[in-house]
Every structure is written in structure tokens, then in C-alpha cells.
Amino acid sequence: MSKNVLIVDDSQYMRTLIRDCLVENGYEIAGEASNGEEAIDLALDLQPDIITLDNILPDMIGLDILKVLKEEGLPSRVIMISAVGQDSVISEGLSLGATDYIVKPFTPEKLIGSLAKL
Image 1 (tube, rainbow, N blue to C red):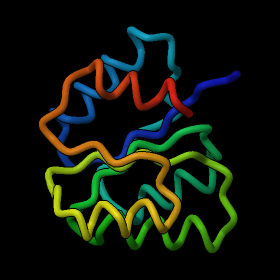
Image 2 (cartoon, rainbow, N blue to C red):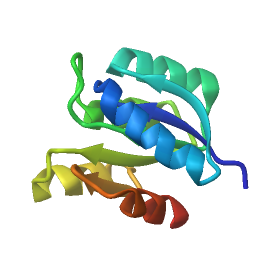
Image 3 (cartoon, rainbow, N blue to C red):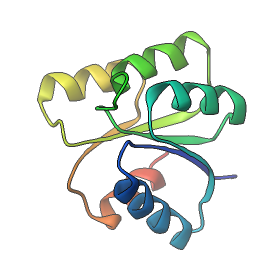
């Protein structure tokens, strides 16, 4: 199983935290994006196995990115990682195709556990 990941978060700190956690656990980083437009371009270009997707980005929300990726038929598995933890947002993310939704702040164990389920 190849495990290359696209990390999408507007916070450099969060991207670094996620990247370090993934690399330590044997995942390869395909790329990183800090906004929605970049995320969509990279996702379609790189076709990563997994995408970690923040919901609140400067130019759009993660749920809208999920819709675009679904329309494009991208096979990547998506794990939403966001400080937005309302049940309605979480269930919408899952119904749009996210395989999991992690609410910030989270532990590295929570992230790796979520990835292990994919």
C-alpha cells in the first residue's frame, strides 16, 4: 500500500505538525497546500492516496473542495481536520465523501489511528 499524502491547511504550523507526524509513521508527503485553489490543483495533479483537509481556508471551505474532488472523480481518501466541530458540519463532510473528520486540537495518535483505518 503506497501512502502519499497531500496536506491542506492554511496554517504553516499545522502543516508542519501533520507532516512531522506522518513522516515519523512512514507516510510520504506528496505536497502541501495553504488554500483551496492550490489544494484542488495539487490534488488533481498529484492524485495522492490520502488528503488531509482543513475546513476553513482563506479562499473557500473544505466542504466545497470535497465537492469538486468528488465531481472530478478523484480516488483519494480524504480526512478532514478542522477546528469546526459542529455535528452538522462533520456529517456533511462525511456525506460528501470524507472518510473521517478529526476536530482540532488532536493528538498524533488520533491522526495515525484515522489513517490506519483507511
